[in-house]
Amino acid sequence: MPLEKQKMLIKESVYSTNTDRLRLLDIAIETILKERLDISLDRFELYLILDEAITNAMDHGNRWDKSKKVILKIEKVEKESVKIYIKDEGIGFNPKILPDVLNNNGKLNPRGRGIYIIRKFCPIEWNVVGNEVCITLETKN
Amino acid sequence: MIEINEGILNVVVNEKRIEGSNHIFEHLVEESKISDKDKVKKIIFDFANVEYINSLGIAEFISIIRYYTNVTNAVAKYKFINVNKDIRKLFSLVELGHLVEISESSG
Picture 1 (cartoon, rainbow over the protein chains, first blue to last red):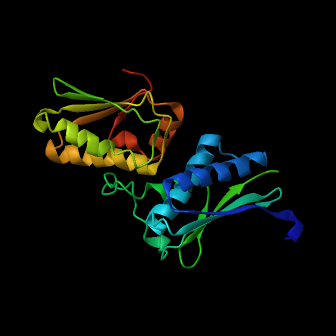
Picture 2 (picture 1 turned 90 degrees about the vertical axis):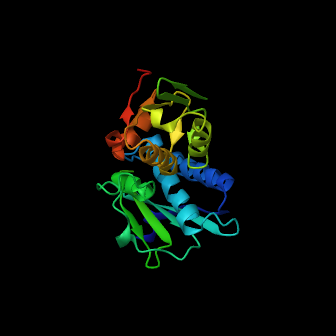
Picture 3 (picture 1 turned 180 degrees about the horizontal axis):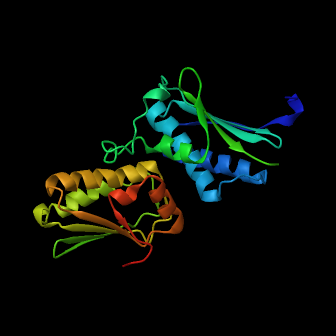
């Protein structure tokens, strides 16, 4: 893939507080909407998956430790995709052992729905350590 | 705001955004201690003011359902009314309809 097709749209880091969570969410959604991408998600769905990924990083990853950062990177690959990277300072985890929230035992499990929601809309991958996710949104432009 | 009438607990959710830090569960449990929990047959949550909810917000409601299912020996029923289109879509995605009756109107 030629490098010029790839463009970094934003790199931003915030601490793990609810105020910073909302700020990072606003930055992320504005960055993506500004590009006027031809993606299959509506604004609510996009906001929701960004929220789930950022909240997951602050909650499960950094345990809301105010001194720990969450780093957001958004890259655009022209006529192909937008890649959203969200990294935390947690110890990481093994995505293969995610709870199955919708089996009979999981229905009353309060936790574990965040990743499930993201997966309903788009692919999500982890780095080897498990402290960085990459969400890929396909775009036609 | 919580009202109890003939075993039906009516709860108006005042928050615009429900994202895990609203303490709805704590408020509800504290407020409903004044009533006899065994008599709670149904809990109706009014979502008219709610514009957004995420998975941590859903977790709050699952905790409430778990709590009342335990203290009322699973006889209680749950209903969300006045739920907007986006939130209904999310509830459907996580199959919340198995646990809660969800309505777009106040009925």
